[in-house]
Image 1 (spheres, rainbow, N blue to C red):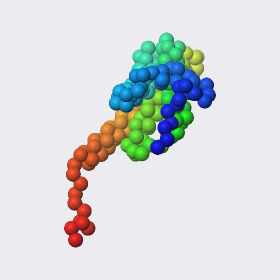
Image 2: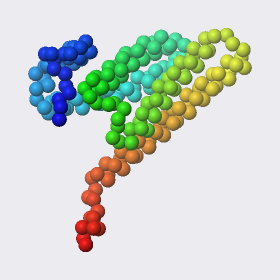
Image 3: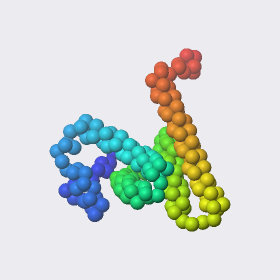
Image 4: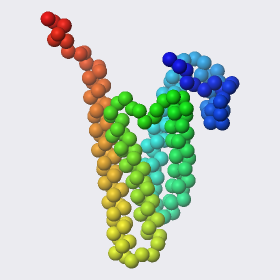
Length: 187
């Protein structure tokens, strides 16, 4: 198997130099394999919290605080997007296709995240639209459509999460239970 980790002593481009510097990849900390694996798992958990938490907080802020939350939410989403793009770019540079997922249970999770991001965007559009003078009928229609769409996407996201967790639990149970004997082996 080819080692795709960057060589901190010999980075090939700016991105790899950036990753090696920010990640301190030549540190003695990474020398011990178990410690490195646990740290990578912890980083993945932290990234998932960031990936799900920021759009959720952005949506809640826009729904509750309204117009005064537009700038802080935008400021929150920019570093979130940078973290996501950096993670995906790093994986691609190391030879891992982030879109290739061996488990189909990840599809509902991706749908949930997409719905959450769209709900945050719809909330932002709703809040921004409320700042402009428009005929009350059009404004009311647009606001209702955006809020209904955001709520519907939230319901879809929740449903997709439930499906994903049930599928994961089913697979975990199936993997833990002993396999039934092969009938051809008895003959």
